[in-house]
Image (cartoon, rainbow, N blue to C red; front, side, top):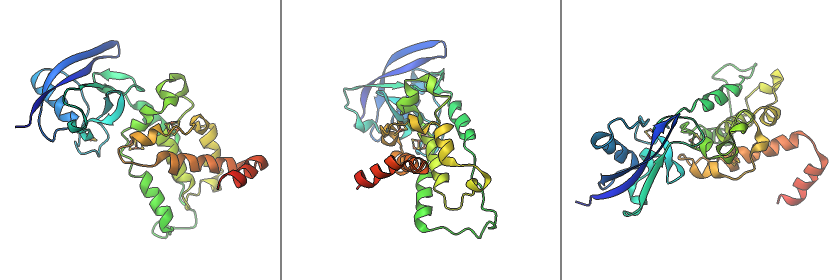
Length: 254
Ligand code: SF4
Ligand code: F3S
Ligand code: FES
């Protein structure tokens, strides 16, 4: 057949520490990196820990780093690598290791809880909601998120700065704030909740300097930066009615 032997380095260890372990492993046509990890479990490393569920890019649990880049193990085809290339698989760097390729992503659940949910409009019953198609489409894009947290892992604001974690919600959750802030039926403002202000003061929108690394790694190809973060920044700035910013926008943004 078309099988070959690939060289892998896989991080093994736990919260106390660990390192890369070398493997030579069989690869067959059409396989993805998760298949190789499963073959290692079946043949050479029965106690290798990895988290996965759907093997279809939909559950978001097999997130790890391959050659230093955040990726889904089940959606990364072996054919994207050279056959003589050593493939290095490591756990997500921004979150604490539990064991081997499994990290504790609890940070993201904390951040999710910090975003106040949709506030239903008072005068409308469910079923009476009406929205323009473009507003529906915008929400739909953000709702493709599978919560893999690859964007959260790659954003340099927390990737290299543990100390920023308290103050920064990360791209996935700033996107959620943006979605709600742009939602025509969200009535948070009626209840005194200004999502633009909380985006800045509680979710750390100002830490994002638009590097777009989040967008680059998103397996759902959501335009996180262009469609959520930048619009949210613009809305937050407009909110302040700063005449210079306003003038700057008028003159330069063409
Ligand atoms: Fe994953 Fe994309 Fe959702 Fe981020 S926005 S958690 S990269 S699917
Ligand atoms: Fe981080 Fe994405 Fe902004 S990678 S800096 S959240 S554009
Ligand atoms: Fe579900 Fe990879 S196993 S996304």
